[in-house]
Amino acid sequence: MPVRRLDPVLIDRIAAGEVVERPASAVKELIENALDAGASTIETVIEAGGRQLIRVTDDGCGMSGDDLELAVERHASSKLPDGDLTNIATLGFRGEALPSIASVARLEIFTRAHGDTHGYRILIDAGRKDRVRPAAHARGTRIEIRDLFATTPARLKFLKSDRAEALAVSEVVKRLAMAHPQVRFALAGDHLAGLDFAACPAGAAGLRARLAQVLGREFGENALAIDAAREDVSLGGFAALPTFNRANGQMQYLFVNARPVRDKALLGAVRAAYMDYLSLDRYPVVALFIGCDPGLVDVNVHPAKAEVRFRDPGLVRGLIVGALKETLAGAMHRAATTGGARTVAALARRTFGSPPSGAGGTAHRNGSQSWDWQSSPAAPAD
Image (cartoon, rainbow, N blue to C red; front, top):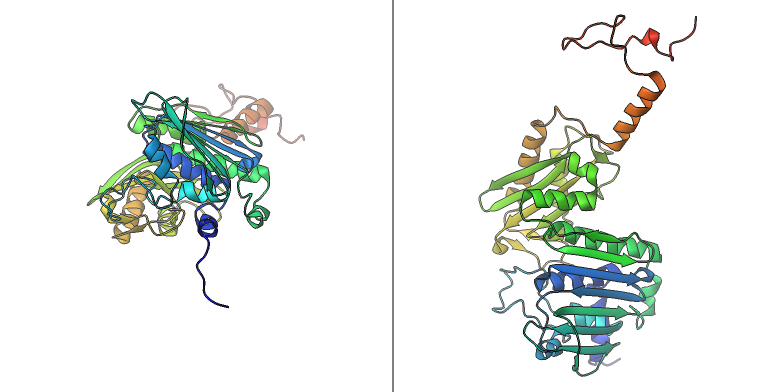
């Protein structure tokens, strides 16, 4: 069989498999674009787990008609003005997301740049692009994806249930919301509870408030602040007390320069720091934020940009282990204040009554009385 050039549309569909694996992948790319555009509010709506509809609306800088024309072309980007891949400061940079999505779905974009008198619209259906047209739109961008993977039915067979895909979308929104507390995030759709995280102020207090929004009030009550640095790398965020743990590692969140990552070496460092406090079948809950010069980390090592490579990985791992161990050692007098602990205490009071305050108890060093078990209703009868 002779060698021949592939059709450009087919090339796009093949490439889309690397960039857009599932609806959550598309949502991640669109929200990252909105964050790079300076949005302060990002609203996402999905239907059927994202298969039928994904709509992401932001109030970012928007695009001109000429920029919109280029934005849907492969490898067109505004984020590498000098072509330097060693100094990437944005979440997106490859210029692959929109054309990849457009090749396997129906993509419609409405946008309006600051200062323009009107907006613009473009429609691309399974790779067939319409021309840019004027349209009424507020400042910012709205992107709608319909019938995702309609042109690649084989990919549809590998998707999970609508509920599972919706939960994956929710997880993407939560991770990006944790990394950008000053931005309001909202998510609505079937098969999931709606999310609406109000924007939080800058600083450690705002970050703690956002983490409490996303991870729950109990995490906020049991979180220890982390603040450390070594050479040109900083580490911040919060780590839960060892007594506030989980049966799996799904609540371990790591970020590098505000980019969510899943890095085995970094997760291993977290595990090592808690080794003296947790059994092997329990996992700590952490949200850690690593900051460094973009030139010290390579984010262009994975199609989904979920993995990174540090110039000095040993320094970063050592920083994580050292900072966590020092913080945990200084807080071992504390125990987790979980809802479960409060429930057990309440049941004990209801069942056995309050400890007697008078005679019959042995005095403790602090002057309080111990509980005489013989006066308890649970004492065995003679």
